[in-house]
Image (tube, rainbow, N blue to C red; front, side, top):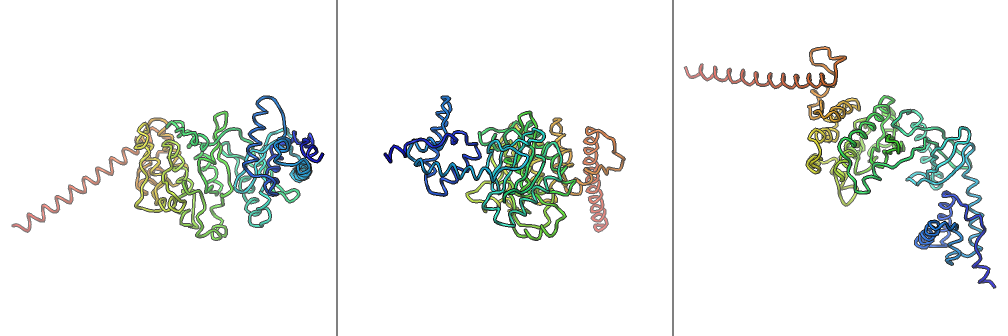
Length: 428
């Protein structure tokens, strides 16, 4: 009799669990030690097979049928999930499903009921919500995101706390990331990659104008929307450039992602600026067009050491992918210069060279010495270049380079003439 009772299916409500609640269900089962991850995955796979045949069964029901759980356990779990779901109710929002999980929180898809709009809601993980520092960091991310409003940035909508759960509401963006494409072993064509990187550079320009640095530019944080748009996401590590107190609190800490982190971030410098984001965007572009990261290694420490080591150089991207232009190679090398003084000074300079490449022209600023780069970028060439077209600016840049070479040649001739005269005088 007892066996028969245990084999009965759980309450029908288990069929209607949302993706969020099934996620909470899995956590509860694992936390209680009622099943192993392997058993849960096997039941989920069986559930998917049934769904393909239009047979709808809840995960709990399947786990009871597979004798992974007892009926009484499933009833208790359903009750617990119901209580958890109530805690996750956010006034004004209807939670639809779970989208994913990051290092700090779970991201949910929801409907903003007042305007019938689909949004994304990030909820700080329960374990982190017990720590004041993580709460402060989470709230700071929301406030920083609120400072930005740009077509190439995932925009903030709302933030708050309910029943001990801290949440952050964002624009819902449908699409995959650059990382998703790279994970499929796909390499981006040059023009496509440049167009995407241009959009991210525009987002960085917007952030730079508001005194912000992202500090975690990487393929995973760039979303490619279904309508062909580009969105920069995840401001979890972003900070205000002028916030010295914040910078000093992180002194000596390597903040960023090893494969794409700038040398100054590896060293934990406090004076990190927008050029760090330009470096990381260069590393992202490198990965996009070559299919491999600029520096690899068996451990994160080894990879980060290579970013800093002045004797370790990247293989030029156009040497790995011979379809790439040499101009792109020079731009990437300028973006990823280990000495930030040799990088683009700001997103505007980078955007200028990206436009040149997209127009099948040579980059205007890449490869120049810092002083020359600043001079060319500012248009300080002895004439007023305001209003000049990009083609004219490039022509002027060529003129400046030619003039510099002429001056050097004349200087060499003059020096040789002086030496010759001295020799003639001493031999008389």
